Length: 298
Image 1 (cartoon, rainbow, N blue to C red):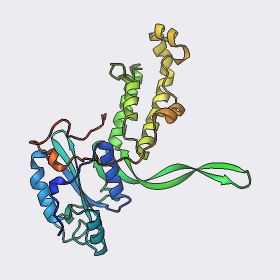
Image 2 (cartoon, one colour):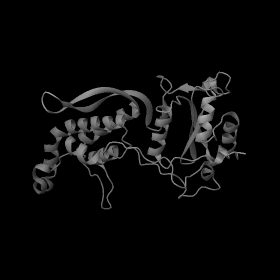
Image 3 (cartoon, rainbow, N blue to C red):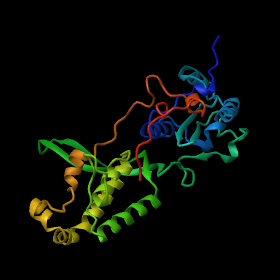
Image 4 (cartoon, rainbow, N blue to C red):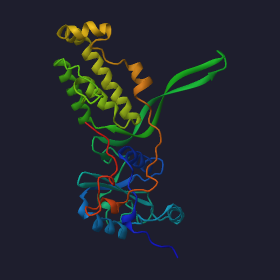
């Protein structure tokens, strides 16, 4: 006899990047494109999760889900993540019977398709979508006897910064340049500020492929806007200009950023070995050490 899992024992992703990668894999590779979601207070979590567990098989393990899939029964996943006193949640489903794609389901009327233009999954500054990207490929050239490189258009599920966030970041870049706020990336007890601090904060974001491309484009904008202002900044700070010479007031070149400061996203572990659970998110049980990490964001 199989012991039924308590829905409050559902594991919570270990940090924000793990959460985003988990949602990306569930909606993309595993085909759980139909979803609904929202935000609730931590104190409402027990009753809400119990309701979801009564409606959908969210407590099934991997073996049980495989069995359900062979019988045409929906496979569903409940994903939650705390931000402050609130919990962001998503219910993702495939097309099986009893899932969100089943019109007899209680939540079918509010369910959305993550691939549709008006149904993308969102989280804070980010949106998950099926996007086209340019990817560098290399092949062995038989005639030349060496490897040949080229860009190929490919489509994949990826996270992207929302359009309004990009516009806000671009305005911030323009304001820093107009105010000659060269700034600092921080470190050694100093806080990041100005243009360099802003660019450093962008590189600290989860660099999924589309986010990485957007951040690079913003860096290129910054380089172009700052270039005619570098001399003005040096004139305003003659001592620093003399100390650092041609590097005074300079921004890091794109090639150096790509080589040393903007690694490509790699697959990471979603849950800790002793995972945080929904139960740990309840107000009475929550402690500073129990909450998963949310990376700093603009």
